[in-house]
Structure formats: structure tokens, C-alpha cells
Image (cartoon, rainbow, N blue to C red; front, side, top):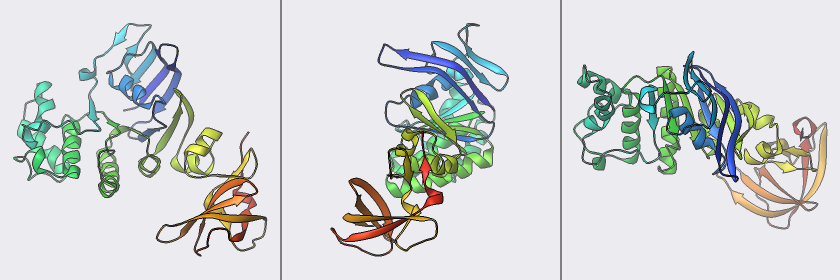
Length: 318
């Protein structure tokens, strides 16, 4: 299902608002909203879901208008055929895994072949043998899978994720990133994912929407966002950038410690050293500018180091 937002506006007094927000989310794609806290990404997600009402504009699911301020259309959330995966899992502790997954189906009165529907949803997340257990008997990763199974049980046209991995530890987050991506792709469901975590957005998404203060800074594939940021905000927010001048910058991996053709040589001093396992991250003083580069050799604080920057990897932003 393709989702289109046309000139969506939502204001909160004079301090913040979503203004003339336009976006197309392709059918079957995995699109992430990425930005700092308070940038408006969850507000946009809630307007798509119907949990928040825009002040103006239109929202289409395919050819169907689900919201229009001009036409006085506002289809309620429960009739938009969406699945929602929340940050806190939102599982009922007194209900079994089976009943947690069945809860939404019962609420929508979709109880024909209920056992089969719930069983299929649990099998999709490899929890088909856990139906009689309770949330307290599951690990964090298993609870997240139950939340996902509940979201897909009604065969929704779109899945909405509101920072669903933030409550998990680092190992589980990595595991669930991979699982969610595989599951949504195998089902062909349009997915919209809200996160402030760069790694989540960049590793899972077909497209990333960078947001700042209620507006879109850039839309692109993870590779486009990383290698060709359109604005300084995107450049500073995604990964790490080193500034050569006010408008020229390079990624840490563009630097070398050996002379190269078509490279710029810079004298620097080591400020800090961090061991990353397969390399060292060096904090450098480059004529008053702070740089971060990667090295296979360990240096010590105050070491003077020559750094060579590939000219082809230098980005210019206007």
C-alpha cells in the first residue's frame, strides 16, 4: 500500500509544528523517520495512524483518502487496517501469548478461524509453541516478537513502528533489527519506522526521511544520506564528519596515514585514542578543528601525525 501525505500541517501553539509536509511512501517499502527528539517524527507517524488529527492537508492509502480537512474526511485509526508496534511492547501481563495476539482480532470482531490466524502470526515470529506462556515468562526479544505477531495478525496493509527497539539491550537490538527487516520484506508489507538511532535507520531502511524541527531535511537511500548529505544538518546528524573549512568536509574513512595521489596532506596532533576492536578511533587537532579518523596503528596523546585526505571524498555543502 502506497501512503501519500499532501500538505499536512499540525501546529502546537507558536513553538512547534509540522508545516506543509509532503511525502510518498512506496508500496512494500521500509521507510524510516530519523531525527533528534522533538523533531516531529512521532507526530507524523501518529497522523498516518489516525491517532493524531492534522490541522490541514490530506492523507491517502493507495487511492483511498483516509484524511482530508477540506473534504471533512477522517477515517478512525481502527478502520485504517494498520498494525502498530510500540516502544514498550504494550502486552497484557494477565493474558497468555495467544490471547495477547488474539486481542486485536477480537476487538475488530475478526474471530473467524481465530486459532488459525493467531497460530500463523506466532509461526511467522517462530513462537508457535509459546501460545500458553505469559509475558513474564518471555525474554525481551520474545516479548517484542509477540508484539510484532499481534500487529500482523489481522493482515494489515501497513505496519507502524514507534521506536520499538529502544527498550532492548544492544545484542537484542541488533538481532531484532535483522528479524524485523526479514519479516516485513517476506510479507511485502509497507512499513514506517520511527527512530532516533542512526544505525537502526541506516541498516534497516529502503529510504530514510531525515527530519528537523517539523520539516524534512532530506529523503534518500541510506547510501545517499550517508555519502551525499544535502544539508549541514544531515551531514552533522548522520555518522561523523570532519570539517576542512566551513563548507568542506570528509568522512573518517576518507583519511589515510600514507601519501596518496590526489590527496591533501594535513598536519595534526593526537588528542584522544579509543580502541574499537578492529581499529583505533583517533581524535585529532587539525589547526584548531577537531577531527575523528580511524587507524590500524595505536598512537598516543600529543603524537604529531600527518593525515592524507582523498580529494574525491571531500564533500562541499552550500
